[in-house]
Length: 556
Image (cartoon, rainbow, N blue to C red; front, side, top):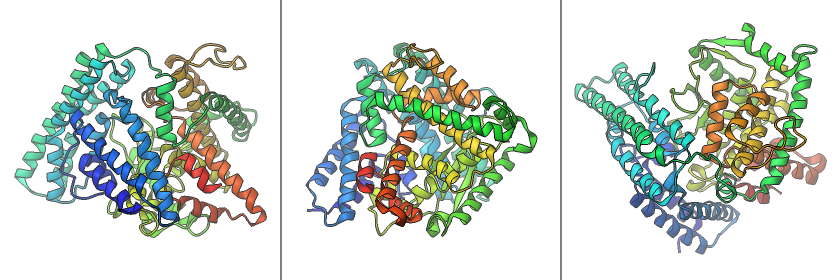
């Protein structure tokens, strides 16, 4: 009988075989020339292998604690994956952030461009986008026939993204940027250049065709209702959290968290300008030239310097940072996607480092009051430290744990906890930066309220000064967010579209942070004066990625 690590690591090969884009994301070699297959047949073949792997793992015997934790993680995550597949949600897999439309485009951000072979891989993938979307449309059409459709909001959002990447308005086609990148490189190969140009045209046409399909064929069948209801929400949230929640209790807790953070913001506003309201303080932070950076390149370099400096100051003092983890790249994200900053992990061998991506939304001026906290969230001690550390733990974690395992609640919860931690460690003593962290906390608290509220159709509490007693809608969510958080209007609109397309993901930040804080407090109570925060952090992260329920068991 195969061992736990053998089964878990073998599943990486299974995923890579069925999902070559995932192989590229993980840094598993040998699949970069292949494109995803989104047809029904491909989906069923993959999940047949998922069921087989799950059965093998259930029968396996753990030889030690490391194997026991790996087995628990594997069984938890694949069990949820099977449930979600059997619910047939894949027949309406379309949203503005985590669906094939975005995955196909964004994979080119992660592909190597340093050799002729690398460019041949890029060409191959571009040439196959049309075929991939044909299979995707087949799956969506079956969903339409069976009544499994997504909302009009998500269809319109995805169609607009397709138009942007196909070239619309002031934006050239995304794939032209690859043609230009090859031309600017030191590779001189006329046949290759011609192939890249032709492949880029094919890819652009594929996205244009996808936009047309969404507008003309799919949109008439899409539903006007955004919320998914209690049952669908519970299953989706369990996948993102790796735990069950009481949605009403969590909803009420979200209001409590928002009240706390607004109180803190009021006090901080007075430190920025005596007597100032939150809005007046934010206006100063947003408009004062001394508090901003001008120029996209200058902003990217400022972010890079901040990440590098933070790593140097953290290492050996508050955390032990492994050698491969000390490198991180900050990049400007291509236009067209969602407007939230994001992180992509390193490849398995660290030849591609961890990267933070900043979508500018066309901005050229960057107030930095909230960017410091965001940098800590995405870089160190947030996502990069956590994820890259796990990738580097080749002796303690299975390949599955290092490259594929984990939930949004575990990862995003840690990253939000990391923002607050930096305040505790004295890195946000500047009230500008502390206000930025608080505004991020307000955003995540609002996410809990509107995500659960919109999808479950809950009423706004009678004690609220915002439309008390009314039932949540997308329009009310937009209005509420514009009043309670201080992010740009286009970002807020993008956020609401995101919540409504991926139910349960938006709450994973605050819910995850809640579990991290509870676990730390439990450890402090048990250890008393002997509690060592650095040691606790190191131990907690070295458990590897997992769901929140398992994390709570392991840490408490």
